Image (cartoon, rainbow, N blue to C red; front, top):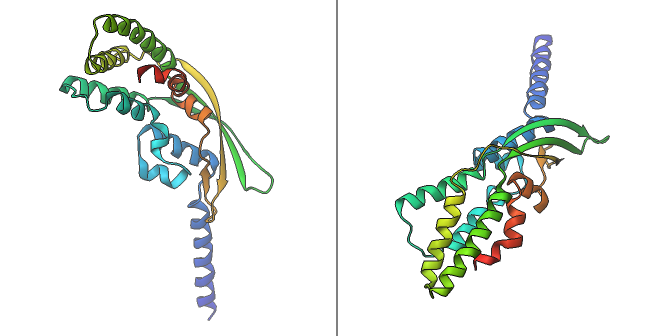
Length: 210
């Protein structure tokens, strides 16, 4: 009987230890979250984030709207996929973690390094407006204008440069009903920092291409 009790006690200790180990802290969850976004790992992201991977891909949606039914060459398709992939190219460093007193909410501050996509997009708009002036004079078709827009976008994204745009970001986490830390869905301002400012640029100037 004593042996049985000892075995039960040992099993209980093991279960408690395993249970604690299976629930990573806020910093670890944020690292998993950021890595999942970078690698576009939807399954891993779903475990630690309230939203979805598509939340981080406003550029792809915008590009698909611009391109519409335009037939792209193989080279253009490859370049387009490279542009979309570049949106997930960022570096990060976790700076600090803070958990509130009742341990139900945490804030983790991170430093991001991204490409200067807002600068690239501004140049795209400038080039496009200049090109459209010429095409309007020539009374170009809608398809010709769309093709010109695609060429301008892809040409400007050929060289994204170094990841030189730095910004800090504070992520908020809360525990779900299983006691696991989950990153809350990001605000539009925080999404914009992930994308080197391009989301705000699209919101401001994106309609120029319609």
